[in-house]
Amino acid sequence: MSIDIDPGSSLRNVPVQKRSADRMEALLDAAAKLIDEGGIDAVTTTAVAYRSGSSVGVLYRYFPNVDALLRQLATRNLHLYLQAVQEGSDLTPNEPWSSWDLTLDAFVRLCRSEPSFLHLRFGELITDRFLSEEEPNNSIIAKEFAKLVSETHSIPVTEEMIFHLEIAVAMGQALMTEAFRRNPEGDPKIIEEARRVIGDYLRSSVPIK
Image (cartoon, rainbow, N blue to C red; front, top):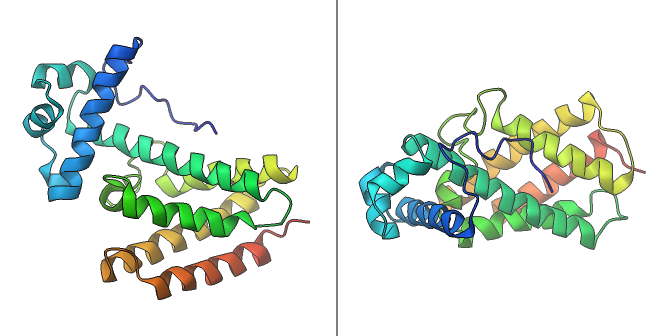
């Protein structure tokens, strides 16, 4: 599943060789672990370089600043999430909105297991236009969901569909924030309420035959 974000928009140099790509991934992995340990403020150029076994000079070879590194990490988180959503949709392609349960489960699973995901997610916890200055995070995610719905059910993407998906994304973000605020593993009651409320909203607002 492709995402309409330039993968090199946060980078000074886009890795071409595997060795360079691995070095950049090590920097992102180090930043993710630092976020889990001390929050976003724990991510500094010195800390990331030290944790990754690299140097500040190598970090600056790829990223002009910490914000660019965090943006790349948030984009990686979004790729991981959308990949899980795609896999869930492939498992249940014929039932309208049957993939919603798997979509929610994927988000919860990543919050519990993927370094940085709970505290950074896609960067919307920092600013609503973290992935791109051109449009809000939730709009980017809603458009990706719209493409998936369109491809799965052979229906056109419409402005109305995107609008309702933006609402669903906003509800999901707010409810997941509350669920993990109350319980480090996610409050089960809030997760199940999100499953019901957003599922009902999608089925009534974006009917799929």
